[in-house]
Length: 157
Image (cartoon, rainbow, N blue to C red):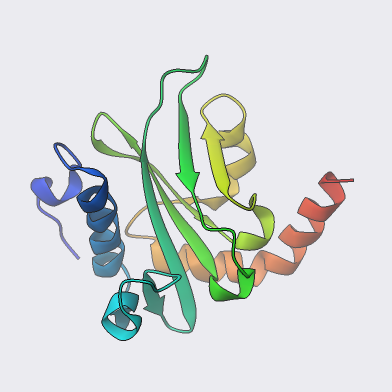
């Protein structure tokens, strides 16, 4: 897997093409057979990519500097969590990939995911990966999911 420099930048892209670029990067990064959900289900698919047996929802967000600390906001549809296995979240800084996260829906809020450079990077650090390691990270998070769900539920009490 190789990318040219132009493929790795998000410069000048509007919201539609911005997320499409992120989906294309994930599509190319994953080994084996990867299927775009809209090829199967059309534009209204609840996820973006089907890989192995995993349904992946890909989101990208530019850095927001309106708060005290840099922050990234991801809008996700409040739907049945069985329709998505993982959120793949791109944190974009200066129009380039700054961080990449693999989050299971069981441990994220219902409609908006917010990651702050202040404290949330510590909380989400275990979910951080690179494009090259994306497939392995998805498998690792899936294996750790029962333990992660328990930790998340215990922290909500």
